[in-house]
Image (cartoon, rainbow, N blue to C red; front, top):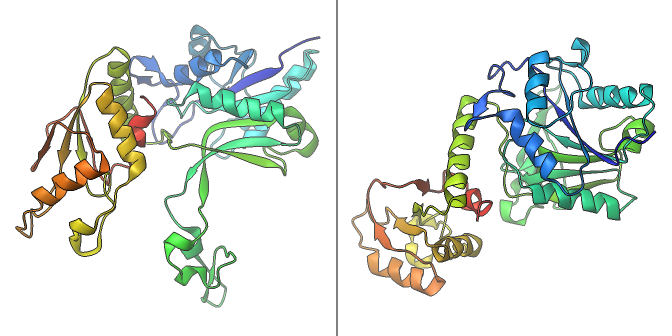
Amino acid sequence: MEYSKICAVIPARSGSKTVKDKNIRLLNDKPMIAYSILDARSSKYIDKVIVSTDSPEYANIAKDWGAETPFLRPDNISEDNSLDIEVFRHLLRWVEENNYAYPELLVHLRPTHPIRNVEDIDRMISIMLEHSEIDAIRSVVPAQEVPYKMWLFNEDKLMRPLVTCDIPEAYNAPRQILPRVYMQNACIDVIRTSTILNKNSMTGEKIAGYKMAYSFDIDTEEDFLLAEHYITIREKMKKGNKLKIVCDIDGIIAHKTVGNKYDEATPITANISILQKLYQQGHRIILHTARGYASGINWEETTKVQMKKWGVPYDNIVFGKPDADFYIDDKFSTLQFLSNII
């Protein structure tokens, strides 16, 4: 009996401790789980969307947004420390008990990631379809911390490196020469069903990585506010509204320099490219800089020459507290936040 070839699975238990009922909490007028359901339904590959939940209320909401909820998940695999594989094996047991054929691929979409690109889902699925030797593919983002400079304590209270690499004493080496490290962001996983059934694993041994520049994992009230702001901006841009974007220079447009030697600064070309696209779309760009604010040195001419040389588009350069729809500084990641909209 046929079932589906590619099935999206959205686990949504009801027992969140950090933010109560976060999976169904309204996020810009939609329950958070709805975003993952709509993403799955927009995929050109996924032919079934199942929400695995322990809550009848969650199940009804999921149905309202177009997902199937053919069962309720048992309480013993809906706890804080329950494993993903328990949830997926439960689903596959239900498939078997109802005399359906197993799907080939399972697409794991966590509802705590309400912001993702459907194109990324489809690219990851296509990789799995094209490479039968891969057990699973997992989305990753650049790690913010360097594991080669992390330590564990031995029983004798002396330290040993957490991880090592080909570079001797990597913990003493400059960050720039260390291997680039990525962290799974729990946004999208695509797993071969046979990996779960035959290897009792959510990944198997041959794991492909899919690099992303964004990650919106909702776990705190602050995460909700950030996601709401992003979605609001995205909707404004989809409607053709033009934004006023205030952007810091050092750390965003220019690499920071030791001792604030701004005349030695070099451009961050990837971010400048994003600004160029935003400017071409008609958005106003105000550059905000505190160069010379503390020292009293006038860097205005140097800054304008650099912006022209590097091809940075802008309407004005100002000092002081900005007034903007969107403000980007070196403490707020990078322009990648907006690059996923344009």
